Length: 85
Image 1 (cartoon, rainbow, N blue to C red):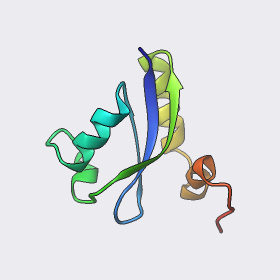
Image 2 (cartoon, one colour):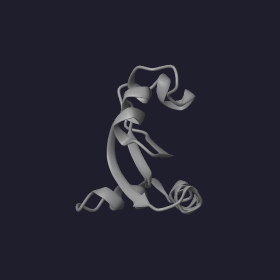
Image 3 (cartoon, rainbow, N blue to C red):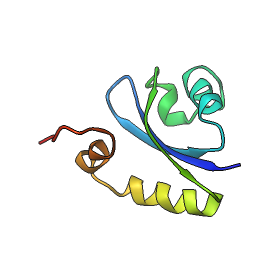
């Protein structure tokens, strides 16, 4: 079993970073369940635009923290080939 670090794009075009062991379940939780993050509940629907796989929760959490520190432009560069100004 691995851990996923993901970037979700919200309906308001904001980006949310998180970790999970099951991307499909987590997307369902964000979009309709009560287990979705408070941030995404008012910004539905969300869609995953990027993910990475890590072996341990510790590695995934460290990467999540690093991604959260990136600028919006740097986050978009993770999943887009076009350059954004």
